[in-house]
Image (tube, rainbow, N blue to C red; front, side, top):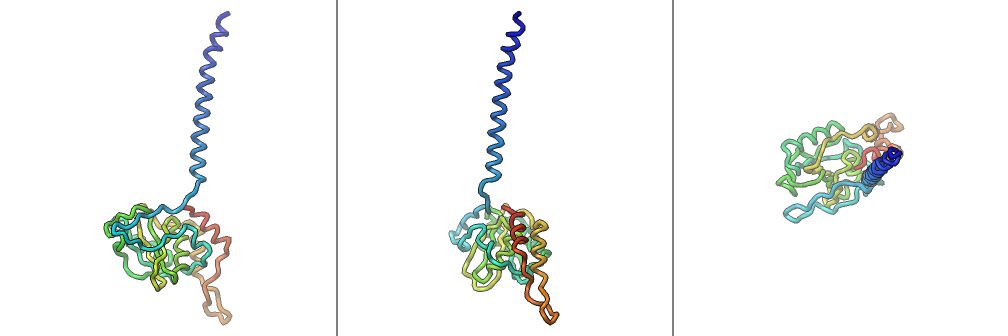
Length: 210
């Protein structure tokens, strides 16, 4: 006669433990999902020790509406601001493989000569280089955009301590290939750079969120 009440008494704490574990699991997954869907963007880079910033930092999507330039028409310089030996040379070679032009050999970053820029990196450009920087923002979506007062259209890529690899996904490569294929002119000669489908640009940017 006492067996049934005994089993009921044992079942009560077991049910309570299961309920507590379920609540903990629900809270944990809520935190994970909120974190995954929360605001994202390039990691902010520090101010140089000398106190002179490279330029004005822009929002991550500031160049999304700017028509990107063909990679071959973009003179890029790569600076090592992260201190890893040979990384600027590697990044310059990877950009060259993607069809980008060169504005000079890789070098140490003049703003972070000690290699202590603790972020992914920066894309630095002037008013004449907005289209070029727009293209590079497709390839390096996690790099901070920095506008300075240079008069030419060169773009500097400063590689920080958190820089990974230059390996854009297929949608971005498709856009680069389209930009690099000039549309034929009426006389059969090569014409202006081909226009990129806005939907393809949107897909390229959405495929590589930071």
